[in-house]
Image 1: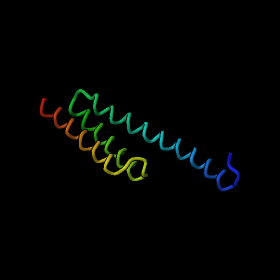
Image 2: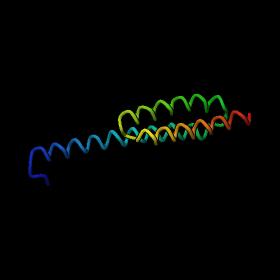
Image 3: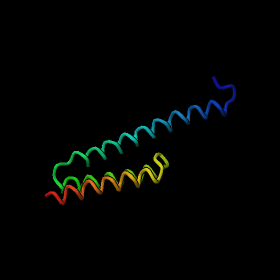
Image 4: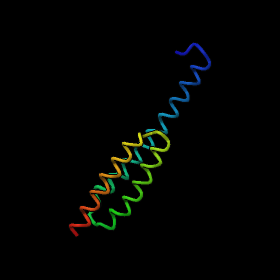
Amino acid sequence: MPQHKSAEKRMRKSASERADNRQIKSQVRKLVKKVRTASKPDEAQTALRDATSALDRAAKRRVLHNSTADRHKSRLAQHVNKLRSKA
C-alpha cells in the first residue's frame, strides 16, 4: 500500500487511465474486426473510415503508438482495396 498521499493519488489515476485505455482499445479492435469481416466493398469502405478515425484518435491520445496506428490503417486499406478489385 502507498505510504504517501501522492502515491495514493497516482494509484487512483493509474486505475482510471487503465480503464479508459482498455475501453479505447476495445473500441478500436471492434471497428477493425468490422472491416475485416465485411463482405461487400461498400460496407468495408464505410467501416474503414470509422476504423481509421478510431485509430487516429487512439494514437492522438497515446493509447497506441503512431506507427502502430499507421500500420493498422495501411493494412486495412490494402484489405479493402483487395475486396474492391475482386468485386
